Length: 454
Image (tube, rainbow, N blue to C red; front, side):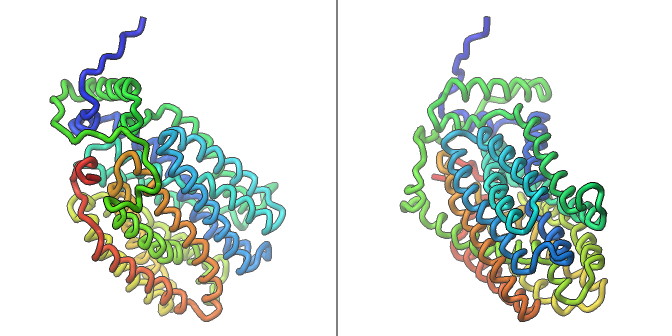
């Protein structure tokens, strides 16, 4: 017979029990499984930057069609972020993960067999629905499961792993795009991404649900069972655990989207809405268009892919620095300084005239951009209570997907006026982004979530 579950702590103590845990093998396994899913999210998002340059060169699509295909993917992500971001507050973090990966895998695989640009556009739209909320749920999941003293660091670890996908997809594109083994090389790149995501979905079935979320839903016995299992795993490695410290009691209530605009959270919601409209213009404006920028400057396809690969090699280094500094530097401060550095280096890119300077300036933009990304993903999930966390982040982050869709079309149009016109547009967005955080952003480092959310 199974041992009956006896609640040894009050409802208010789930937070305290998670906070007192030493970082152990349980936490590292948890982060590893989440990070693998994030890896394929980044693989998918940045894949089109390299495939798009090749497909323009071969005549499969025009530059305008490339902009529309990028936009279609981000529009799909917009709906996916809303659907699964809010859905994970209703149905759970683990459930949202499983459905997202299956949808992404199916439609990315179908996209690999698209006969023309229009079919590819539809496939990218539907794949975007699956991939859209992946980072939102990762940020939410990690923030709720890790002790406050290290949660920023562990969100940054998921970003380090995720951004390591960029040099891999750049290398695969460089090696496979010129080939034709039964299928064109670009199709194999998409098949690899879809197949890997299915494998990660299989591994993720062992993830536990967030006990913080379960308590917020009033499912106390399930939360207690998961907490006891986690504590047993940690105790086997670390020995007896100390008693939990008092923590603010959770609100046993389902969050409502209208609450995001009530006085307690209105300022934070408006901050993130404006922030996400602007940040994605600078972040994806370079990342998704860099090989196309080089083509428009007269570089050949092989040369563009070569430069793109060397620039991509630094992609994980920005999140690594985020990992090392996220608990040392206030995340609010970093989100003011890094957009300014992104804007400054961006203005230098159109002036680079040699291969070495193109790679160095592109690498600097990439470094600052992905350091910035690691910090923003830790920061945004800290600003809302558990019952509203994925809804708040999903609702505000969805605008970044919509902004990326429209900015892809705008960048395609601006490119006819030269690369500098594009960087004036992206640089201006990052300057405004820094200003928003400087005025409205709260400090969050090492504050327990329940205290931070009020």
